[in-house]
Amino acid sequence: MKITIIGGGPSGLYFAILMKKLDRTHEITLLERDGPNDTFGWGIVFSDQTFSYLKDNDKKSFAAITRACQRWDNVDVVHKNQKVIIRGNKFSGIGRLAFLNILHKRCLDLGVDVRFETNATDLNELPPYDLLVGADGANSFVRGAFSKEFQPSLDLRKNRYIWLGTRQLFQGLTLIFREHEAGLFIAHAYKFNDTNSTFIVECSEATWRNARFDWKSDPETCQYLAEVFKPDLGGHTLLSNNFVRWLNFPLVKNKRWHHKNVVLLGDALHTAHFSIGSGTKLAVEDSIALAKCFKAGNDVEQTLAEFQRVRKPIVDEYQDAAYASLVLFENAQKELHLDPIPFAYKLMTRSKKIDYENLKQRDPEFIAAYDSWKAEAEGRGQTPEVSGQRSEGRRQKAEVRSQKAEVRSQTSEVRVQKSAVRGQKSAARGQKSAVTGQKPAVTGQKSGARSQKPAVRQKTPGRSQKPAVGQKTAVRSRKTEVRSRKQ
Ligand SMILES: Cc1cc2nc3c(=O)[nH]c(=O)nc-3n(C[C@H](O)[C@H](O)[C@H](O)COP(=O)(O)OP(=O)(O)OC[C@H]3O[C@@H](n4cnc5c(N)ncnc54)[C@H](O)[C@@H]3O)c2cc1C
Image (cartoon, rainbow, N blue to C red; front, side, top):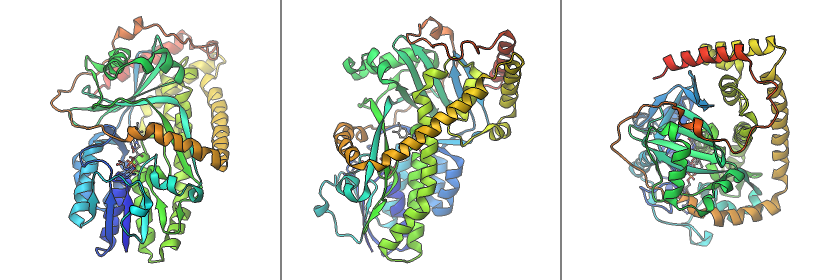
């Protein structure tokens, strides 16, 4: 079979590997607009579970990937200048470029014709194919070319984000909430090799405007954000690889996943907000699922229909979880009144994939601290977190329902998508990685942020539920535990 794949990200490369493994006579051409050492972003996280899939499907790339990974089991939540550590969450971090380079090598070893610096812009100029795969990311050209058939929806989310790096080494998935004069800034940070960490910052549109990022140069942007996160960065700067862009996360869905002998994979098909760290996992798992469908030996159209049938319910579930998660980050301001322990609990359970029982198994000490906080609050006749969670759960479910309804109103969305493609095109370009030679620094919450005045003040909800002195003691004793558990 002749297969043309557009896009050399995780989904396209992994699919090429699996199809070559399935049948060496497949003639596979992969077109990638960037060079082998260009990519966007810094490092990515995986849950360990993904790795079992990688192991079962291609042992060689699995071995190379695991060698290049950093591992940790803690999520650290920094709120009100205190760090709460939640253990038992198995993650691995890897540089996006290192990950792609491993897949490039496997493709080349298996005889895939990988053509770098080849931007596909015209369907009529593609190499001949029996199967065309659009693995060309969130702003997919293939999806655009078949928009009538795929019926995509694209929802540019409210918060702005920027994907930066730093030499400060965050030894775990670290979620940092800092109020600054312009408003609330949130960082998602983790180490992905011995010298670097990913540092993604998100904020609301209002905060972004207050900070006047539209008037700031790239170095000024990094400098400003380094000041916001000064207590977290241990004196390190924020890094940008010649490329600093604020984007709105595009939530992509498609009603139909295939048309005749054309199929979409990965971000071209669906995106999952970076706060659940599953986009690459989903992209790779799409490739695994599609290759498995081809193993059954049916014709191309039947195979693609089967792919959508088996895979879509799983992706829908992840997209729902990712949606609940992004909504919480978009509305984080409303939760800032919570003390660090209930705040961390809320964050950990935001996607509804992890609940109280899972957390108890993962980190009994954290749950003990949460229970004692809750008992004290209830002792005073207050059940702030529980009631808050219920209404939050209802609100999120309603948002997920309205999100699903949006998929039905396709036509205008496609128009939005086209303009988004123009606006965000440059985003997928450029960032060259590999900054080296930095010693690990000590992570520590210092008092710097105390002098930072929150400009957007928390309103009344929760004020009346503010933990009293006894409750603070519980938090403090947890803080002591937390500190003594520092890596
Ligand atoms: C800020 C941020 C943080 C993230 N963090 C994580 C994380 O921690 N963990 C995780 O699992 N996921 C993460 N993701 C998601 C992850 O990056 C994507 O889900 C994943 O890369 C999707 O893989 P893909 O192969 O489908 O698409 P992409 O990785 O986007 O690859 C598409 C490729 O197609 C190429 N291309 C595009 N158009 C053309 C064209 N016309 N012709 C030729 N080539 C083309 C592009 O250059 C690119 O190389 C994050 C995403 C963002 C935005």
